[in-house]
Length: 169
Image (cartoon, rainbow, N blue to C red; front, side, top):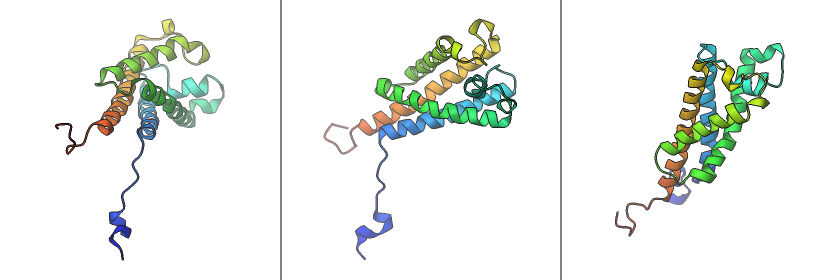
């Protein structure tokens, strides 16, 4: 048997930065919306992922159940893919954690200030408790830091010269 045909000699095809970024968006949306649902469950905030995507559009009993929260988390995760794509296109070349933190803060502002009229189950900003405002800002900042740092790290990791290159490293 030829050595190139052995399974251990086969190399996996690398995943592109764009695909990793989209996966990062899904995972980031999943993780931080689960934390958002837990924050809602433990009364740190008045809003949950289901408040945005489910209860704002359907006013039935199941939307306040565990199923409603799960569907809200899945919906936020899918929408987060678009958020990661925006970060990838606009900010992938940035360094450090601050661009991601600022991105998360900007997303919070867009959702809670500009898009708030779309979400009927989410109180207006002046009507929210300080606990809700602080908790959601923290969750969005952490989400942005996760998305931003992950995407820019992958971009810079793939685009840095290898150790044996003539770049002097």
